[in-house]
Image 1 (cartoon, rainbow, N blue to C red):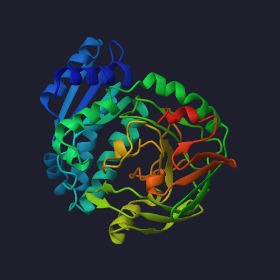
Image 2: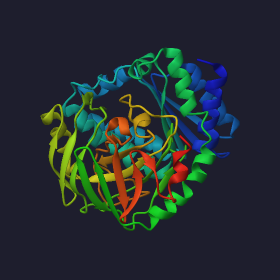
Image 3: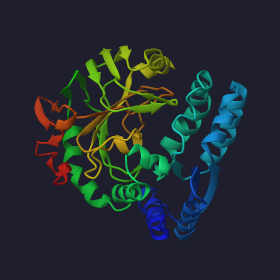
Image 4: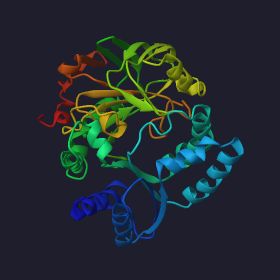
Length: 369
């Protein structure tokens, strides 16, 4: 990995994504990431006048901690990490993908981990109370998922992360946000999809490099009980260690009343994690112009130009319909012609057709692709 590209990425994360100020504390949580990248992040935090903290983890150790855990052990783990998180002004979470199936056979233990560790530490503290950004670090396995050589994937990775003009992206989102802030009804029609809901009063949050890298989405949130219809997702999604395909939901008055996928039992077990898991917490439009294919990696796939993600589970405090869950599962539907197309109507106006924005408030998000 190029030393200069790692440093450029570290500088983007520290100076732009979390906007670290002198005297602020920052936790760098690195999972299966080379020391060289973590070192660059530490150096950038110091150069910004901040106070770095480092937590190193591997997916194998994470599994070991979860596999034989109990409610008491998870609660103790959460209590310790919550104490540290409460001391932090900022958080950088960076993870190298080495085995997406590592958690595949954890079953109920993983559900408990999400409820007793992840929810109190991340959903309740990190997300609402720190300046945070999360990203992946390029690995050979990710190159395999993208059907590229390692070098080709590294070049792609930097083209969609640190080589993006996020200031220009943010400017292009301003008119779209203004439109969505005043919007009410949404109607999405695509292959095996016909779904409606309201976003009245929810507002919209533009995402241009401040929470995820890569970035490129603008999200809002459905009124909790307003969702009705059918939605089918045309990209694979690994969750709890299983790669789900052919996911389809039937929704009535906000609640998923029927869910199918390649593994019906497994997907319903996730949706039965808690009461909020069968309701939706996010609706987003993907618009990163340099991402045009799916690779079963959420942080990339949800930014695909011409995509949407409609997310069962927890809503963000920044755009909140009141739904609470230990689940937040960003499931992606691509609406470009090669994926079957689709149309999005907002307040009766056609906003996007076959993955390309056609309404004047949104056309800047095409980025001339």
